[in-house]
Length: 633
Ligand SMILES: Cc1cc2nc3c(=O)[nH]c(=O)nc-3n(C[C@H](O)[C@H](O)[C@H](O)COP(=O)(O)OP(=O)(O)OC[C@H]3O[C@@H](n4cnc5c(N)ncnc54)[C@H](O)[C@@H]3O)c2cc1C
Ligand SMILES: *[C@@H]1O[C@H](CO)[C@@H](O)[C@H](O)[C@H]1NC(C)=O
Ligand SMILES: *[C@@H]1O[C@H](CO)[C@@H](O)[C@H](O)[C@H]1NC(C)=O
Ligand SMILES: *[C@@H]1O[C@H](CO)[C@@H](O)[C@H](O)[C@H]1NC(C)=O
Ligand SMILES: *[C@@H]1O[C@H](CO)[C@@H](O)[C@H](O)[C@H]1NC(C)=O
Ligand SMILES: *[C@@H]1O[C@H](CO)[C@@H](O)[C@H](O)[C@H]1NC(C)=O
Ligand SMILES: *[C@@H]1O[C@H](CO)[C@@H](O)[C@H](O)[C@H]1NC(C)=O
Ligand SMILES: *[C@@H]1O[C@H](CO)[C@@H](O)[C@H](O)[C@H]1NC(C)=O
Image (cartoon, rainbow, N blue to C red):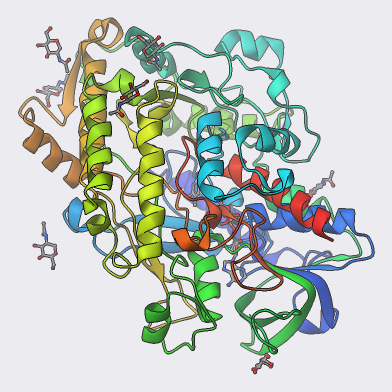
């Protein structure tokens, strides 16, 4: 439900941004650039700007250029007021819209997913939910990332990453009165950084917030003081990536560029990196970056005397690599691109979080005020609007999406969890797992080897009673969804043959590995148990969806296929950090296998999804990457 007053205000604010004077720190045309740079970062997003900021800080004598597709004038993300949670999707200038090919195992529905197209990337448009992976996710990543012993600085396990999680963000505890009123808890010792990327708790919660939190407790889910310290099997409050006083979004564009301008740090907007070119062969530096102006369509090359760092996000990073002739030979052949480096993992191994939900109604609702419906009361709306501009900010607009969640291990969800784990092991043992991979790479032996290793790792995670399998968040309302945190199905990101410079063709393989449906089914049955709790029963809650008639496994699977959210906007893994003989694209030092002076630093590098949203990880990956690159130079 969009409010007409909100729309008017929104359009006015967009117009205001568009007419704002050009930002002095931003370059807009090639004439403002140096003839060459030491480091060129392709994509000014969450990880890319973190790296660019750190490199320019560490090396005052070296130059850094960020090439960004979008613009800088800050347009609201979909979760920014006045659109916020109850709004629709607006501000299309600041993101790419990706509509996937039909998903066969979801009744041919298309996944709808956005990706930031603005200085700051997806951190400038996301839901601001700022959680971290579990320590077990990071340790599992580290085991698949490298086959042998590497440098201690190239490890990606929890202990190696924790300092970078800490460094990447400035957490501010809520004022005591807010903490007491809301019951917020945290552990300050897992934070401690001073980087101007802020996280904090909003002063506002909706009136029905505790209904579902209490329901979770009724289910036996333990309350954790903090979920960002490595252990997150339970219920916790999650900070938001926003300023503690103004409650305004904190994002990479502000914290790692506009608030970090330096004479050796250039950023050009409205320019697209087409490809990376190696005039003397892929093993000889320096690479050139071929760039296209989105204003006048001119194309030019810039030399990266040290390195190119590709940070264009999960969809566009593999597109840049494929246009550069780096990818699976048959895919490049179809696009008419000569093969420079045959790396079948580029744009393969694609994953996202997905899942379906339940809803209910109340025959004896409590006095749940305020609710989002309160926003249709003009006085409430006026107060909300005024409160957001107060110092400190207050009211509904300080709460973007949700800030509490549960993370539940499979062992707590179903007594049959060992059966699910055994099924994974059996499709590894009999080799049938490969048949669930996307058709265009399911016969590639390196990709199969990598997938088998990922599945074995996921089997271990699902069999570990400390590792979450389900996430569910709540802020207000009468529905919740289950997020399948460790999906086993895989998809692809391939150049769009009709428009190789456009948004690539994305195939979501959601549900193609049938064991994911065992997990979806277990998750759905678990969520349905919420209806039987003392808390929901006390308000006369009745299940609306799936609904009383949906009871058999077959009926429930049909419901899941019809209703599932195919993307919780956590795409990943299209340039995975795994050995080359396991279908990997980069090594633990982030270098593309077989290419000189070329690294990938963004959410493409994950081998598989962790038990978390991705923005805090994207910042920490940027920090770790900068540490590695700085040591090398
Ligand atoms: C709508 C939405 C909601 C989300 N909600 C949450 C949330 O609540 N919590 C959370 O933790 N995570 C959330 N995420 C995920 C998280 O924000 C992203 O995973 C993370 O920010 C990705 O970082 P990145 O560095 O990989 O890429 P990005 O931050 O997306 O950066 C990529 C950048 O590259 C630029 N680019 C692309 N192609 C080119 C090219 N050819 N040349 C030059 N530049 C290019 C893009 O414009 C963009 O600026 C959400 C994501 C979305 C889209
Ligand atoms: C999905 O599309 C395929 C190919 O067009 C078709 O064969 C199949 O029947 C469709 N499935 C559903 C559930 O509509
Ligand atoms: C899972 O179950 C164990 C054993 O009953 C319990 O100790 C733990 O708190 C539960 N965790 C969650 C997240 O439900
Ligand atoms: C950070 O950047 C924003 C946007 O340009 C600006 O409004 C703000 O004052 C800056 N803050 C600091 C500390 O530089
Ligand atoms: C960039 O350099 C490559 C290799 O030298 C060349 O083939 C290409 O045409 C150049 N592009 C432009 C726009 O000059
Ligand atoms: C709640 O939903 C159930 C099932 O759809 C329906 O039968 C019932 O009338 C609804 N009750 C209320 C109070 O809306
Ligand atoms: C799950 O882990 C336990 C040890 O915690 C082990 O005994 C069991 O064999 C494992 N189950 C499967 C199916 O691998
Ligand atoms: C809820 O409780 C009823 C009565 O005890 C039981 O029949 C039903 O199976 C329970 N439902 C769920 C989803 O646990």
